[in-house]
Image 1 (cartoon, rainbow, N blue to C red):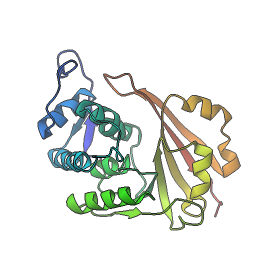
Image 2: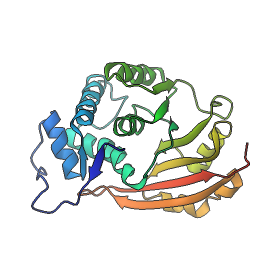
Image 3: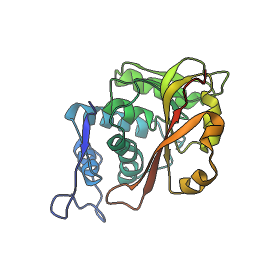
Length: 238
């Protein structure tokens, strides 16, 4: 079961922090996540805080993330990656995160859904090193790093799901999964509002896929519009 839930916030039950900084701490993380409608179990919250600490400690050159403010990181990285669980009742059990970078959305996805066997796909050496350190320090199981560029020739092991966050246009990602995603497998694209223009010219049937879900939403108490697009690979492809 996903280890979180979203809740409706009113003026009486959400923390007011705009104009006043929240101290980076486990309690501060919990406060900010609640502001954006996310409530994690304590064990998951502690692991997310440990991940955040590693992210800040190893981001001296801003190569892991260009975001600096604690509030902004929680909003645009952690809440963004966790809120999508509200639209996916059951995740595929064998997944890849394409273009994982510093671990988004893969690490938060794994923390909230520990049952998923997940491969983080990231070719840049410093980020590979960081992701492996996170896996070791957080003692995560069923997760690994694929330290190569994802192509139809390199990604050949079978998976039942794939996810990608603001990586590239969908029609460029789908061919990368040609040898990996099994028929009936699903691809989850985390996108911004510009995806509506992308969808207008996308023909998933040309790649052997069917568009099955479109979710458009806003991160609660923010100005950040988001979309989750779900495609399913047609039967009889492989």
